Structures are given as structure tokens and as C-alpha cells.
Amino acid sequence: MFLKGKLHYAWIIVAIAAMMGFITSSVRFAAAALVPYLSDATGDFGWSYGAITLAFSLQWIIFGMASPYVGWLGDRYGVRWFLLFGAILFIIGMLLTGIMNSLWQFYLFFGVILGIASTIFTVLPVSGITLWFRRHLGAAMGIVWSFQGIGVVAFLFLIGAAFGQLGIQWIFWLPGIAGGALLLVLVRFFYNGPADIGLRPLGDLGNEPIQKPRRDEATKVRARVFIQQAKRTATFWNLIGIHYWGCMGHQIINVLIVAIAVDRGLSLAAATGVLATQQVVGVVVRAAVPVVAERLGCRMVWVVGMALQVFPLLLILFFNDLWAYYLFAILFGIGQSTEVPTFPIANRQYYGNVPQGSLYGWQSLGSGLGMGLAPLAGGLLWDFTGTYMAPLLLSLGFSTMALIQSWLLPSPKVRQIPDWETHLPANLQPAGVRAAD
Image 1 (cartoon, one colour):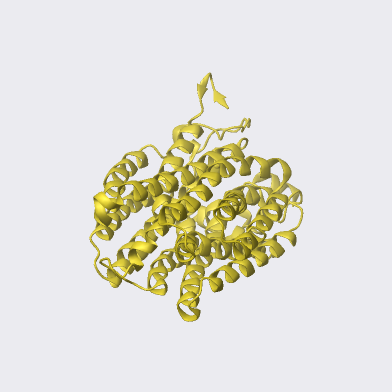
Image 2: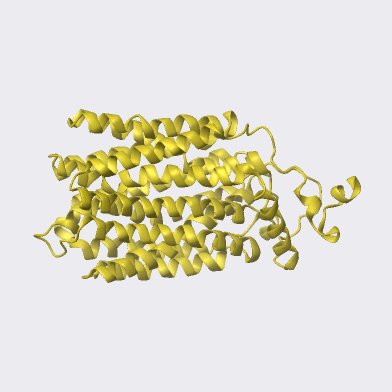
């Protein structure tokens, strides 16, 4: 884990990525605690659940549609310039959301601008970290994903403790200004890969000369050929499906659980506490899950995790007591937190050391569409039926689909396309591949 007695810079990259996630992910998830304020007819907004959830949906749909392109651009050109662009968009989006006063502004500022910024800071730092590690990738991902959860809890605390004094403007302006400034500083110290500063990936004991990553036509061809070969495997599409159905299942809960609990008679403080408990549990679980997946395999982690997205929903379907909500929050928090952090580990187990940006970007397409369509469907159904029961049953069905797809995955011990480099043009094939031919 150390290089010549010093901490390997890979861990600095992890710390930077973790802080970026802490800042940017908090807004996407914790803003759900604002739904009761935005829907309150006695306040400044009074919007319907369907209208409010459309903004969350826009943010995630943009994330899903843009992720494959963002991942490819990161593989092709490196990530630093795009992170700088993302930091500027984050600041602009947070400042403008703080002064919104109409639905179209909510959609544009929160849904579109922050959606693009979130895409950049979700796809690129995570896929970039994989280039820095040959060993301990699970521990690295655990740190990154747990800090995202801590960011959500911190923003929830800010909403609960200070919304009455600050109002919606400074609830967005404080993290937008302070967090945005920190993002601009952190980008300066994020390198595209270890070779950029003359290092090998952590755990790489090779003797070959260190070469800086190529950002030329050859890199583009390698990324394109790999993703073409990966698309021919059923696992490629199954992984996207797990991301889609799993996110459909838990995003309905993330966005609407506070509103559902309040509608059923809980106080706003107790309902927000349910969401906060769910997120606190996620902090611990996200730290451990990548390590467990690295040792036991991604399939086992997802089967258990998706089962814990399904069965705890029965608690709040049949019970309306505070204990049921908090037990649900603990179990569901474990279940939903196993999904996303496991993907970089699964990619390594199923495909090896390959261009990760494009692969993770395609998987994020499933995640983004799931996270985007789910709250919109849940909110519209709630408006149409007049009852919280519709979104709860919808979440149950989506999570069940994710459980089925997890069960259908092959063993992660079997590499899916170990010979993909044989499909490269002859002049781009590694020496070992050419010799085998």
C-alpha cells in the first residue's frame, strides 16, 4: 500500500474522489427531504408530487443518457478538464436553484444543469480510480462510496436544522459556494493515471518502463473495440439491467419516503429521521461492500442486497408504526447500498483491466434511466390514485426484477472476454497477443 515508505498517490486520488462525491452526491439524494416543502400549498411553491419528481427524474435521465459519452470522453481525453467543467456547472446550478421561483426554473437549474454536473462527478472519478489500483480496489471504492453517503447525511442535517432560518436560497447557496470552491481546488490534484506522475498502479509489480497513457487514435480504437466485444456478452446487458431495476426500486423510496411517512401521520422530523437513518446505514455498508464483493464475488453481494430491497418493503406496507419505519430504514439501507459500489468490482471480475470509462458509462445509462423514471412514475401514480400505496407497490415490483437479474448472473470467477485484444488491428495488439497468434 506504500511506495518507498510513502503513501502511494493512489490513496490521494481516492481522498479527492471521495470528497468530490461528498459534495456533489449530497444534493441529488438529500434534496428529497425538501419535497414536503415544495408541495406545501401554504408555502411559496405548492407543486404536485408529479411535478416535483419530474425535476429529480430529469437529473437522473440526463445522467443516464450522458454517462456513456462522458465515460468515453474520459477514456479518450482524460478526466481533468471535464472535472473542471463539472465544478463550474455545479456552482452555477446550486446558485440558480437557490433563487428559483417557478417549475421551469426548478427543471432547468436543478434537473438539467446539476444533472450534467452530477454525471461528470459520478462517472469520471469512479472509473478513473480503477486505473490507479491493481490491488485494494475494493477498499478504495468503499471509501469513495461511504463518503457519498456521509455527504447525504450532512445535507439532510443542514435541511433539518437550518431550513427554517436560512430558507431554500441558502440551503443551496452554502454547499454550492463552499463545495464548489473546494471542487475547483481538488481538480488541480486529480491525475488521469499513475503514469502521469511517473508511478505504477498500486499493486503493479511489473518491470516494463512506465509510459504515460496515450490520448490518441489508438486509445479511441481500443476503447471502441472493447465495448463492441463486451456488448456481445449477456453479462454486459444483465449488469445494465441490475442497475436499472435496482435503481428504479430504491429511488422511489429515496425521493418519496419522507412524503409517504408524513402522509401516513408521522411528523416531518420523524420522517426525515427515517431517511437519515437509511443514509447513515448506507455509509457503513458502502464502505464494506466493495471489499466483500472483491473477496466473495459480486453476484452473491447483489443477490443478498436486492433481497433486502424487496422484503423490508413489506414492513411499511403492513405496519404504520415508527419502529417499522426505522427497521425498514436499516434493512433497506443495507440493501440499496450494495448495488452501486459493487459495479467497479464486477467490471474488474468479469472483464479485467480494460477501458473502464465506457463500460461504467453504459452501466450508468441503466442507473440514470432507473433513477430518473422511477420517481416520476411514483409521483404521477400517487397523484392519479390519490394514495401512497401505488409508489410502494411499484418499488416492490422493480426491486424484485433486480433480484431476479442478480440471480441470473454467471460466476464472477469466469472472465467474459479474455481474448478481446485479438480483435484489435494487428499494429495495436500487445506483443503477447501477436505472439500467440
